[in-house]
Image 1 (spheres, protein in one colour):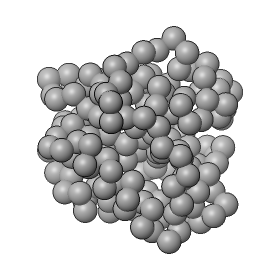
Image 2 (tube, protein in one colour):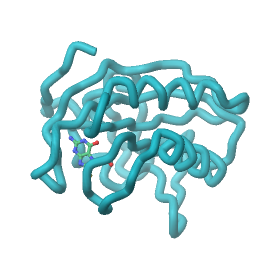
Image 3 (spheres, helix red, strand yellow):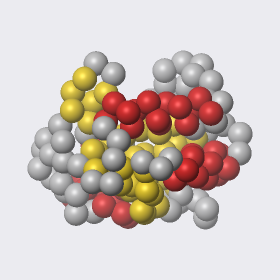
Image 4 (cartoon, protein in one colour):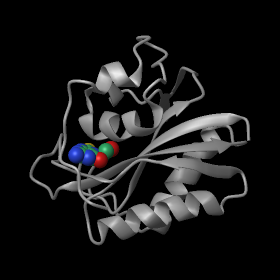
Length: 159
Ligand SMILES: Nc1nc2nc(S)n(CCO)c2c(=O)[nH]1
């Protein structure tokens, strides 16, 4: 398992805590994946499309032998398995798995951009990520997660 990956997980429909838990379980069930760290779970106000329910968000550290495109297929498969109904691009969802980092690689493909392009503007990603990866340096702007997260705040839900 030589690739270190960070994911952002989110849910704002149904039993949100259950969906986060099941998504982590499904990642760990894959023989090519080993989940190594979980952040706390945060309850966060929706950004983007604001007239939707509050999200539960968390960050996950994992190691994998998968290549980026195969990891994307795996996260999409887990979203389908947990019956994510993609009503609209920015709408509510049972579960969302976003790939934040894949080692310190810069990947720009038509269906996959890593580091995640909206990472720096998302407190709901940076705050959980800072719990488990504060010293990681964002390879495009060379700032570490601690610096990106330090002036941000979000509500934390006892998970
Ligand atoms: N707080 C919060 N707002 C969001 N808006 C979108 S879209 N999403 C889905 C992330 O891709 C979220 C989210 O996970 N959390």
